[in-house]
Image (cartoon, rainbow, N blue to C red; front, side):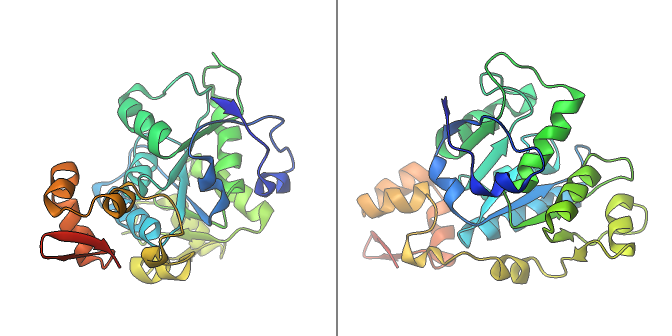
Length: 257
């Protein structure tokens, strides 16, 4: 764990952090970032759509930022992994909630964990609100995947409005996400009608130039062209990358496109 310089994006906040601690790949802060937040008790539809959208954004070189919680946060981090930043409401020596221990541990090794708290600081109701301002403040846009009327995600929306950051929401059936319905009704958010089109709009740059954000599979394949070696390490993911146009497989060899 090390303390880092406060990113310029956070200096937009009324109360920027006085200190910021990090574990992981700090270079992720240098790229285009989108926050994705939402209900802890999320619908399967919301979590599935969130994971798909996060994966598309990550594939387009965009870093996904969320709060490390269960539900939508976990889906966002999982879909974007390893191009994801988790901002915690406690210090970085504590992985909370415990059910996300493995996810947070993986992010600490291949993504980035951030916190404004000194070691041995536990989360409180208020620290979650403060955490939300950092999640939003780091980013160019906010996606609220699902939210009730009393959801903490609506506080995240308020931070976005104060910073003039655009807010987007997923489409839902009646009464499934009344918080995001209210944002739409009040003209404070736009609906995402097509996940791929949305991801393409916010693309920083294609991974085809291999200069966007860290991708473990591409890094490995660049150094190990033997198909069998790559398959032993990553399994069917190798063929998914070929279908996505990220790598080329020919004569049992893997090459970057």
